[in-house]
Length: 218
Ligand SMILES: NC(=O)c1ccc[n+]([C@@H]2O[C@H](COP(=O)([O-])OP(=O)(O)OC[C@H]3O[C@@H](n4cnc5c(N)ncnc54)[C@H](OP(=O)(O)O)[C@@H]3O)[C@@H](O)[C@H]2O)c1
Image 1 (cartoon, rainbow, N blue to C red):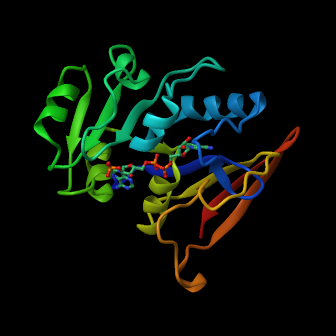
Image 2 (image 1 turned 90 degrees about the vertical axis):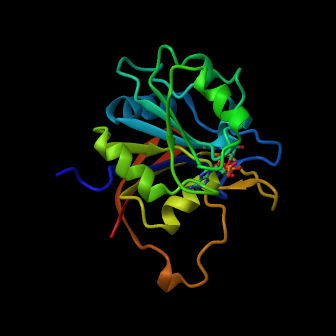
């Protein structure tokens, strides 16, 4: 029998004050050595997950480029199919395996737009994507490990639902501040520390001016 969900690693580069992007959506916090580390990790997982806003703001490729290795499947959470046709992810879908997760309420026009690309479309949930259901379907498709690369809203949802095993955080030497910048964890947050997940620090690794922290869920 398949395991009900893949192994999930939450990953992000944060400023010292825990931000993953400025108010304007600038998010290039990673140093070259950290990007090399990240791409090595990408090549070892079966899939990468990001939210729709990250695709719209950053237009990432989510491939393995700084090291040699295979590209994982790219998965975008996009309930209403809003990512643009000219996004790098859709444009490179003939070369790199791509899944767009949508909800059952996706407007027809947007679904038709996505269907023009050689991607897999997984539909779950009515208004928003049901992560547990999506992960079950991914397990059936032999996806055994997933790197969740953000943004803050997606990371919150995985944490809130207890759907993660590890967290890899790179603390970068930047100070961003501001209550409109993007936090590592968005959403409502936990009201009580006793209800929030407790993590164990597995390793600390210094990369010049960065610190890579690897936490596992207890
Ligand atoms: N520094 C870093 O490591 C890093 C990494 C990644 C991103 N970022 C930054 O993060 C920012 C974006 O973060 P964000 O919090 O605004 O958005 P996000 O997490 O990228 O995307 C959130 C959106 O994903 C969609 N979604 C669909 N199903 C979902 C589900 N089950 N749970 C959660 N979201 C779901 C929702 O839109 P729909 O309802 O329309 O589907 C939601 O609004 C960008 O500025 C980017 O630069 C930084």
